[in-house]
Image 1 (cartoon, one colour):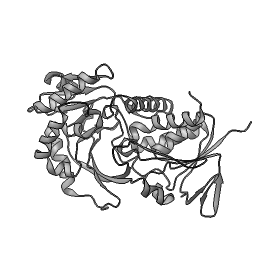
Image 2 (cartoon, one colour):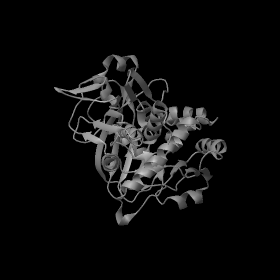
Image 3 (cartoon, rainbow, N blue to C red):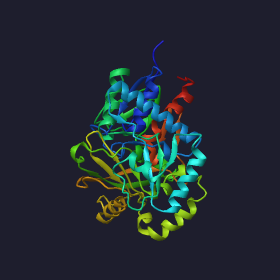
Image 4 (cartoon, helix red, strand yellow):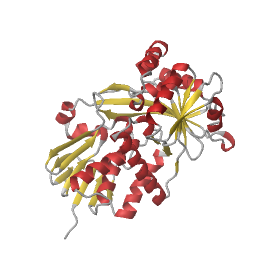
Length: 379
């Protein structure tokens, strides 16, 4: 009996996760990417696998499934990763109260605890001690260097599962069982459209009907810290707690949000919350902001970067803050708190999209669940 075949459009994290889930079920998989390598939101991020941001239940379980798949792939392919965990730092009593409630709700469900000042400073030498009241520790967060890891995953899929990649091949039309690129066409039993914001080009009516927005984020990278100095866990300020739904179960969060709306009105207007992670070479990735709309100014705004850096200084004490890069990324975002868009356009054609800023954290888990359900093959 011949293998079933599948075509995946897009070689970002969602496309790779879909290709993997199919390949391990013995599909013959072909991936099409319009660029010579992945250059979109999948490489323009912190490289964080971030379960702490997900609420308890199915989304947290999906994040932990993703994390386990990331580890498996990284171990097999020799891809760098660091299970550093994370610290959310408290400098006000209301921030500490939200963290306390988070731990009370989640400590039986995940690796988290409330740390004293002394315990926090032992976890990371990069924490600003001035005014520190404590921190929320989570041990579930993991870092990869997304700029390298995304392409390394593609190479791994080729080496281990014979997945075929067609780079510099823009798919202009899908009509099951075929996909077309100009005068060329290929056929497969199943087709998966995982092309991020570019899904709008293939299916403009569906894109409009789904009310998808696009989010522009601004990020920066600082030079490698001197003398091999490591910050330890990824570090977050209090603003991150009102950004991630994982904290919404805390009863004191609305009061904290009210204070932030008074003290950080401009930051919230631009969707600023601030985090910093460190890669294998010691460089620091810092961000970010969130601006929503269908069309974005292609130019970064200096005052937004200044907001990010100013807030970063409130909770960190770094050896070097010299910037070496700034950039922006754009990803599709579902409305009304929806976490993904999965549509069967026609028999044999499935769109997987709209993970927002959770692509690195949720894609492997989501696509594993989707393909397991569609094929009735659990592994």
